[in-house]
Image: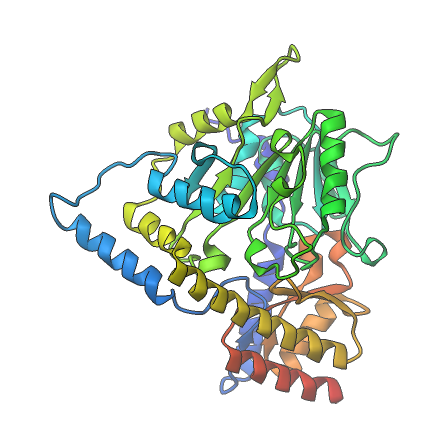
Length: 411
């Protein structure tokens, strides 16, 4: 008798998105002539920039000849892209990351979910609350948690992010359970909060003191405009020994449908075996990556490499500026309604204190304005009382949505 993994039974159904879909369909049926504007999903809407599509097209043309054809490529990624990343995203900022410490993949979601496979099942895992669900669910699947109770899984440590700490949780205090594997995301999804160098340094110091490992999700780093804020955890001295960083071309270059990302695992990054002996996390990830992944396609990697040309950088800056302007418009409008919020600056998300039930606020925006947002409760118990609005849409749609919401809130 083939038995299933029993830990899958602990997983909660995607109540958030199924309930949103149900409510939207009910609204559509009741208002068949009304256009629904979606500001809840984190998908980009602008087309790929010209220099990126040109590189993509040229690479496809190459593949159409025997001389230019590429079959299986290196699982870790082609050297031309890894070298471009090492210099463009790190070397240009004074951070020493070597090309062979960079692993190309088809998405940061995949990598943040898969990397937990490298570690023992009896370690203590810590996640923020509110949280990107992948961090939690993949550890549930692996058997690192107990039962689900009142919005949380037994066996996980939760770092609450709320107005009291400006949505930037601090490391566990002395006397609390030591956390071995730490998930952090800045700029944060869903709250849009950004951490300072000093705040990240506190986490690095904690990891150093407890032989812990930080998994740093930097998928939205391209939206950081404040020069005082870190774009990479490796701007913090010593982080290369205790942190893995995940980055993506999805929200940076519009690759949500093209699929390309990368993970940085420095050679100095260390975990430990059962005897306490140091083990290279990079070597473990390389083994896992080459065993379970066949690499990103050559045309996609050529398109990604075009992001690091002078023209590509200008185009991507224009794209992220566009979404940031959307975010600023959203934040200004929400504050004019009398609601406090974070994000919308150095981040494409606006996290709104709706002063009540998240779903009630969602219903009000949908029923009165035909605008879809995301209830914060879907990201964990600490998300109750908040909603997230995404800046990923065309400007005219954002402006139209804000006009509708203004009328709705004046009623």
